[in-house]
Image 1: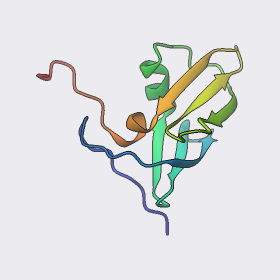
Image 2: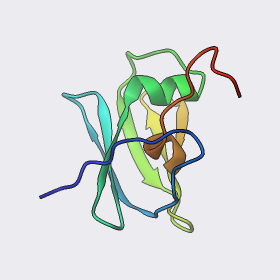
Image 3: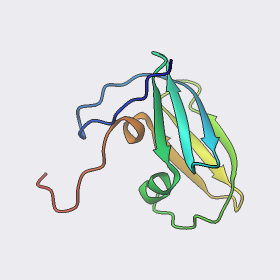
Image 4: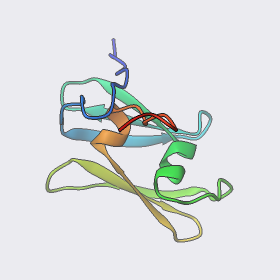
Length: 101
């Protein structure tokens, strides 16, 4: 049985190498498996927002891991734009608007 990771507050996540990533088109999210076997999900809209991109109409063309550190991955879309996701984006909740730093 797969363990689905629940994101924690910003700054509380612990690094874990990423084993693989795949895009689930029906759910419009990325499924990320870590070395522990735990699974995280990253919403496509959140990835694009984090990379200051807004066009949700582009299809995912390819995905590749940072082979050296396995600390993140990149996504290339059909229009040639590239978005980056680090392990923190998967394991940590985004900070709420107006929250004290």
